[in-house]
Structures are given as structure tokens and as C-alpha cells.
Image (cartoon, rainbow, N blue to C red; front, side, top):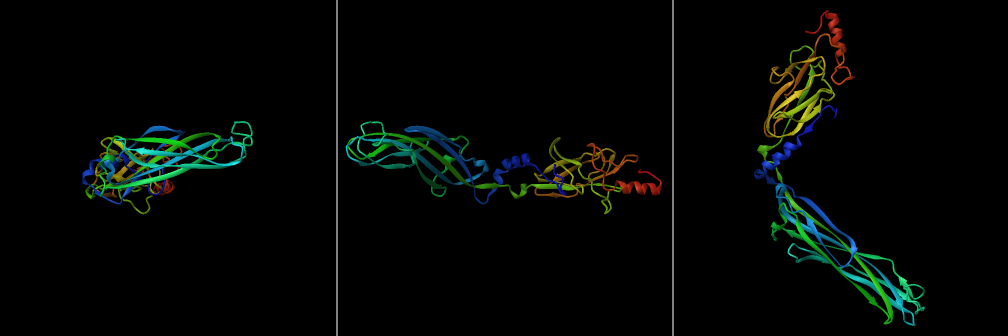
Length: 352
């Protein structure tokens, strides 16, 4: 638990439910983005694959644009033997076409990585092994090509990108080897390819309406030395006490009081709650905002966007208890316990 002077707990689950309930009462704000990325790993070509990309969830806002980004990587290694009598220059490699296809099979976009390697080889050494003096096995080379496509709501129907079921897109690669050189040769080529696709949704998020704004609850748990229910300058806060926020009988958030007994709950939807303070050993309640019929508990109503600052709780030690707050074993003594004992000795009486 956080033990700062002001502790706060966010009511995330209720806040999320409130957003869903109030979706029809909201307005758009500054655009934000959601990005989904799918990949086809490096594989020997030719290949075909399917890609599943989540559609945009209309529950989070209004879709205003879609950008599809595609990156294709072609990889090629070639082996070559000059079988002619004279030294020659050779150019080898491969050309690949990597396609992204829509759900109907039509092409959305493509990239065409191309790779070339130049070798000068002496005349044939008598061994057709792509080695020796007249042959070579070239190391793998890669080429990376990217492209993108932007669709805007004002000019394109984006309804196909919205929904709960994913889009099933197609991916396809076709590669062909390239050779240029002597008419007498041996040549082998190995081709591979990979691709990555990002679909970026630009949207205007939904904003909770003003009449459903979230509120806060907070105040202080203090040692009410004179038991009058009034926080006074010489009455210290009670640090490290558990405070719970309860809705319909369920604890939805909890904090510990800070150095001066302060606590707080933020992002609280409008409604009626119970704030409960668990008293440590030897303490009894002297005050809470709705009376002591339920000591240490107060029923609080939070209005839309409301700030509740009067949910304070007073406690005092029973006579005869020691100077340890108790409750968790080994808790530090309360700040003003020593003063209380001195006052009681001087007056010759104990606490009521």
C-alpha cells in the first residue's frame, strides 16, 4: 500500500462499465490510434498464407482513417559455375513479388524486392562444383521494400474495417531467379521471403458526458482526543489505517491512510457508497458523517463529477489500552499517545 500523505485508489472496473453504458451520450475528442501487426516469417518461396487482423471496435470511438503498411523482405543466395573457356562477368540474383490480398482475393498492395550479385570468374577449371577457381557460392543477400496505403472516412467507406470478427487477408509470394552472363554455365538460386503488415486505425475516442463524469471521495481519519467529533489543531491523523470503498456490499477499492491520516478514492462513478474504516485495537469511533449507528462506516452519495471531502472519521483510545495502535502487530505508536498519558496523569483520571 502507498503511505503518502494523500492516498488514492482508482475505481477501474466501474469506470469501464460506465463508459459502455454512456456510449450514446458522448462526444468526439482528439484523434488517437490503434495499431495491429501481423507477420509471415521468412520462408522458402513460393508461398501463400492467411493473416487475421482485428477489426476496429466501434465501442471505443469513431473510425476516421485506416493506414495499411506493408514491408516485404526478399532473400536470395546463388551458386554459379563458369563452364566457358574464357573469364566472364556474371550477374545473378532473384526478383520477388510479395502481395497483400483483401478478403475478396483482390490485391491491396505489393512490393517487389530485387537482388543482384556480380561475379567475375575465370575459365572452367574442369569441375562443375560451383567452387574452385571457376565457381562460387554467393552468401545470402536481402532486400527490404515497404509501401503503405491511407484511407480516410471522408473519401472511402471504412465500414468493412469495423466489427467484432477479424479480417482474413491473403498473402502471396512468387520469386524468379535472374542470370546474365556466358552461354555456358551452371546456375542455382535459392529464394525466400517474409512480410509484415500493420493496420493503423485512427479514431476519435468517446468522452464520458458531463452528466456522467467521475467523482472523488476523500478526507481524514484522526485521533479525536477530546471526543467532540471536531478536528482540532492538536489532534493528529492516524497513519496506516485501512479504508475501504464498498458498493452494493462489495469492496471495490481500498487504501491505507497517509502520514496525517488522509485518504482518497478517485474516478468514482456517480452513486451511493459505503466508506468503511477498520479500527485498530483499543480504539472506538467518536465521529463519522452519518452518525455512529454503524461506527466506522459512513454512507456517501457521489454526484456526477462530485467531490466529497467531508467523509472524515474520528477515533479515540479506550482507557487502559497501551500506546501501541495494534491491529497489525508491531505497529508504530500513535504520534500523540505520550501526550495523552501525561495529561491523564496530571488530571488523575483515565479516558472516558
